[in-house]
Image 1 (tube, one colour):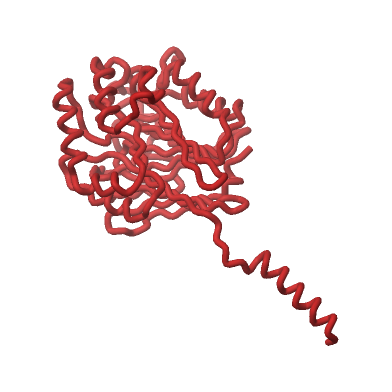
Image 2 (image 1 turned 90 degrees about the vertical axis):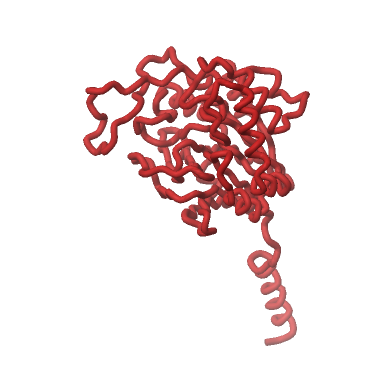
Length: 350
């Protein structure tokens, strides 16, 4: 090999290494999330979440179990929860975002007819330190958008309110035929068949349509109720099928790429995947069980991972490569990663 050939070889090796052998790592963003914690129980899950050093922790509802018509009782339960050392550890280590579900809204399975929803909102605002000039204080309900920036990348966090405007769910009557023969439990509720009922309310739907038009690299839609599961007889978007359909059509019409749902409520963890013609797969990551547990997981043909019945929190790790990689984990109270599922950003784009 002559000198010229040797130099050409070294140049080729250097070019290859600059492409594939670089030690530079893509930036990473971590976001932790969870739901369903009794305010008087120890919450070591929150300390485990803090150890991950996430950019934010999202509380997805049932953050306390208020279940009261007495606002002093509700306020005292928030006070006891936030005095817990595990909550303080999390609060001092990261940014906290939150929405609510029924028990911290005020009453089990309650919706727009809960008589103290305005008072409950003010208590929520107070304890989660919502700024006095926040847009959240200028409208009914607590729906809101937050953003996390990572260099030039943007994560949009859409905090839905699935309580303030929601019609009552329809009671499943004794003697009604089971929707599937595989049911091993009696459902509580059945789907609405009329379209005059609502889950989000017109004001929130209008706001959401505008939010989905805003630029973002990843959109986390946070809902106390599960979105992508099949109907199972308990509270979920499936009890308002016309509203679930409206959400899918809204994502299509706004061309909002990068939507991923984060949900709670059910006292176990799972990942569901909803396939819809003309739309990318809608993944729904349920993390529910900071302290709460349940005896069984309901039927869910859309479940692709889980269930995890032990106490846990959820963790998203986004690696900002050319095609960002989103790793979804459910980490239990023993520090075990019970679910680890990875998708590329390109899988949830138009």
